[in-house]
Amino acid sequence: MSDEGGEPAGAPVGRRTVLGLLALGGAGIVGGSWVQNGLARLLAPIESRDPTGLVALFPLGAAFRFYSVTGSVPTKTAATYRLTVSGLIARPATYTLPDLQAMPQTALVSDFHCVTGWQVLDVHWAGVPLSALLDLAEPSAEATAVRFRSFDGTYTESMSLSQARRPDVIVALRMLGGPVSHDHGGPVRIYAASMYGYKSTKWLSGIELTHGEVPGYWEHRGYALDGTIRN
Ligand SMILES: Nc1nc2c(c(=O)[nH]1)N[C@H]1C(S)=C(S)[C@@H](COP(=O)(O)O)O[C@H]1N2
Ligand SMILES: [Mo]
Picture 1 (tube, rainbow, N blue to C red):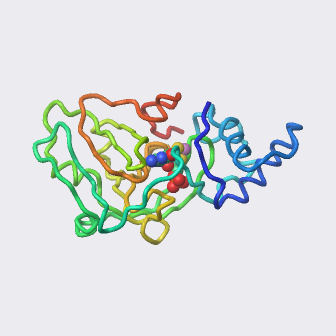
Picture 2 (cartoon, protein in one colour; picture 1 turned 120 degrees about the horizontal axis):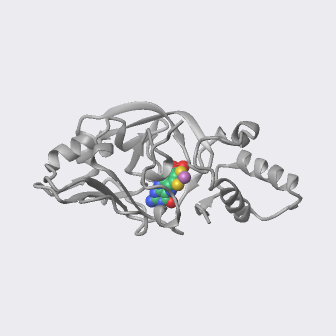
């Protein structure tokens, strides 16, 4: 089921490892994107960090994969980027990249875990705490959840309002020591430290306050609505 549409860019170690896994299974040599999709299929049912020991056995954690469920994503610059905050709130708003850069920033060093098993440890992140934008929006009494949209035109995610207010959920402007790159969802993405990577919407374009969580792209394909990492 869970082809994450990942591109093989930047994952030579992962690919070598996959070939090893496939060789063990007697599958022989296969082509590039199929290899990654095969890995996703192999690991997708695993809903915790490493119950099988596979990740420890094969060092998949060396590098980020670049995931996109869409073929190509438009590039947004400081001049063209917009983030809208809408829904069940008193104060709808649209932020530019300079607007977000001018707000107080939170930095954190925290791990990134994809639910399919790969992880990157001690990643440097910085951005605006989502809670700060929610405070400015003044959610109404009926608002119980937050829905994220992406300017890839396809991806959505949701989390409860109380999860969204956690101090470790940020509207990330910086990652890995620089601005969030296009491939990592720049110029602005979500980073939710206590949740699996699929909650960290890339190419963030909208934050909407809703009544109840709206299942997103991956929830429609079997992922849990609550993406909290439990172990
Ligand atoms: N818009 C969008 N956001 C997304 C995804 C995606 O395909 N599209 N994939 C998610 C998943 S499953 C993971 S693990 C991370 C991967 O982040 P990375 O591409 O920076 O490694 O992005 C998440 N956010
Ligand atoms: Mo993921």
